[in-house]
Length: 128
Image 1 (cartoon, helix red, strand yellow):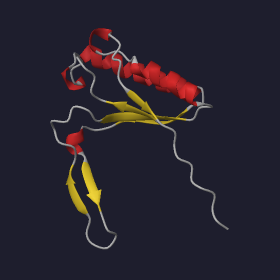
Image 2 (cartoon, rainbow, N blue to C red):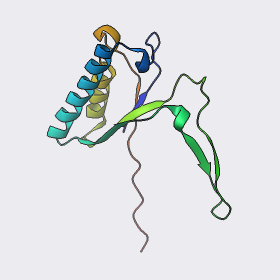
Image 3 (cartoon, rainbow, N blue to C red):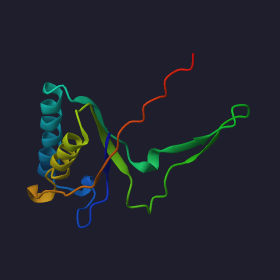
């Protein structure tokens, strides 16, 4: 899983970008997604809504769940989205993350967005 961290030093939030910069960025994301899909590597990829819409839910399985608002608004770093890829090795996942990191930002400059690359945990074999 390639997880996109939102905050990039010196890059304003995307809702402050010029429309043509947003279009260029989204077009890059769509083209990369299409390429990965054609290669059979893309499992899923989504952008996430702003953290202000998030809810934290905890439960003991008996009582009503406790629901609280998401991350505090003053937090600069948050998960912006993800790409789930099915690749042969970690090197390929890093290669894809590096390309995605260089997505165009304002004025078309590479964003240098931080991506966390993490393998999915495999479930243990069932006990028979």
